[in-house]
Length: 422
Image (tube, rainbow, N blue to C red):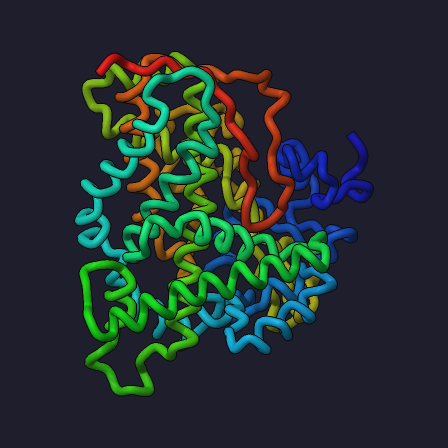
């Protein structure tokens, strides 16, 4: 292996499988400056948690597009403005700090409480079963395209009160909200992302206007009418509402999809686990354990950035003001100082749920409880519907996205299924 100074997380081979690289960083240079990326990588669990919780020094109030952006993004932004739409920068929703973050979070948090999520449980299970029915004959199936993707997409659209016949448009928009924060987008792709995002704003604006007049029990209604008893200046603006609804859709699809796909991949490559879950006397507990260990082991969100608000020191390194600092959640989730035998997948691990898959501190994922419940429901319905599952290709032939930030997931999951007799 090359020396750390010769390596970079932007190398596609490392981005595909970063864990050996992270292991070297944790032991040799846990707060490492990646020259090619132009950013610091924080790789030890305790350091990551400390940085994530110090928002006054390591700010989340940044525009990711300023750090990683297509050369055509300014053109695409002007195009969005010219059409009368918002740019939906992360700072319009929860990518802010201090009182503004606290205000927005407080106004919408009740829509994602345990009570609100529990009320959705039967409907989530029903949507999972409906999707399983589409390949009830078994055979060769792409579980990413035919199950892991449509389940969270249908759940978030249903929860927000968006019609399920618009899921393809919503899916494209969710992808574009993530993909536009990428240096590789061509001019044509940058404008296509813009069109997709504007379409999503149309859906959001229509739904918001309907809920203002006719409140329902869905999440959009709860967000729209949050803070109704507060002074007008304390309520969410239209731009904040549209941004929060749009971010909820994007965040509620891609990360959950990837986590579900990793859990399904685990079952397809570890038949003893599938058998254990099928025969378990405490199936819900074992499935929850599988899901938590999946999120720890595979880290669907590998890293997210912060920016230093002043000169500081971390791990003996002097970090200047306005430096980009990546919290490498995937590395923290494999830190042997926090998890025993971290490179072993073990659903009996006692502390799996303390993974960093949803972040930590005040910016911990608002929809974490909903994502957990979706994932558990998707796996439970799958486990009880199939007799067996195996990969239809060699493991080395599976293709992964190569993003170092925001998302890391399978591009497809071809399997052979044998379904249980009805």
